[in-house]
Length: 148
Image 1 (spheres, rainbow, N blue to C red):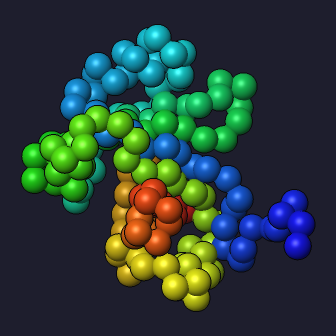
Image 2: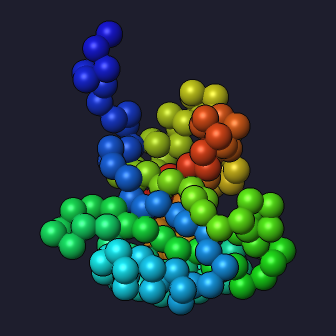
């Protein structure tokens, strides 16, 4: 089989939606990624369900897809708060876009991947999200996301 012939499975858009980076100070993270690296700040919002404040920065000012999502915990006992305590700031997850969340999750289940949340939950930026267990995805926390 030629890997160049592989097409995205049903439901997946075949692109990275965003890269999640855990930070201890959101404003400092914005200064680095927007001020020094030149990414465009799109939005800052709170995600109360996850006890997070997030900033979304566009990776490609020329109109390409993909963003960096900075994640600052609002509670040290949140998922990202515990991540920071254990591992420190850095790469938290990679999010892949889904055109059809139902089909994408059916494919994940059929492949034997464990979902950390069985049903999509509301996430930041008007998206619904499901996370895959990193033990099933080469040690990387993967998020599948789609527009609500």
